[in-house]
Length: 338
Ligand code: ACO
Image 1: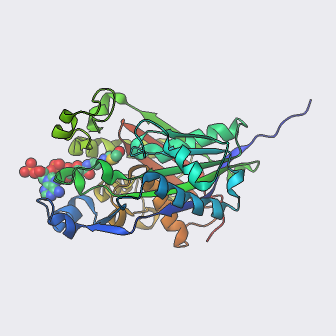
Image 2: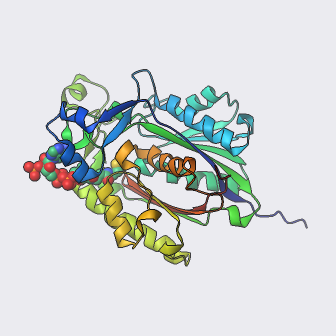
Image 3: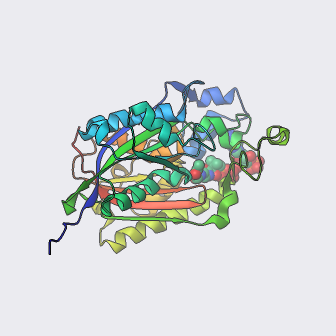
């Protein structure tokens, strides 16, 4: 009887897109009662990028994807699954943003769908891509985290508008027979009992579009910032400790710890709790703000483009977001160095 060789999911390439327009802390000072000093001290954020009025989540996702596909050495017609993680889709109901991205890339007759896991979306997609590839159903999966978060931010609410930015990141995940190129481990989880920590109340079947939705601003993101902060630090730290212990890897052996970029204080607290050296921890929140599902791939792209992420090096991803959802992943970068 012939035995099929096992296949592994491998992280082949990365790409990102950042919109041109910058919203600085100085700009925000003119919009709400805040100061550059408060924002930098409490969040580490100096600026964030904002998409143009006629620039959508699918446009940013398609631009990041083009780079990721080109850098993977594949052509678009070799992609056999397109997945997008977003909480700011082009349309809230249908069609999915993944379908629109596929069309913009000229990818035809290929399964495409979105997932909703807020800031954990990209790492959630890694788990979906892994399952499709390791079951033998797909070979080259395009995963995209893209957000036009500015479309759900209330720019009169100083507690949220200072945090978020727009952008996109994409990666190609491919089948390989080389175990050393494959993902080492991945853990994703959720707890819906904390759903009200981060919520956009409308539009949805609970609050369909109505005058009340507009009057009460229910279409904007609402966050229990302080409670979310504490839970984020606890969960992110616990998740990393567990995945490292399970795989008998020390924090010292991780060249690139890439946490979700929500707030520098969260990243610093987690890094310190794990006794990570500064050069191990990737920080991009200062220049991009929190870009939700795009935050981790944008950060990976930054270190790849600067030559800091080399072929074969280990990445530890760790994320936390609305749902509540959280996820961590341990995997080598299996693409080419820049
Ligand atoms: N400028 C000035 N003052 C402000 C601002 C502002 N922009 N925002 C809030 N304040 C005030 C508050 O009104 C409060 O004033 P008071 O003491 O008079 O009531 C004071 O500052 C302290 O407010 P806190 O909310 O306690 O401030 P905190 O230090 O917690 O920082 C922040 C707030 C930045 C939102 C923080 O809680 C945070 O980062 N939370 C976690 C965010 C997160 O991780 N989200 C998860 C991922 S997002 C996703 O999934 C989409």
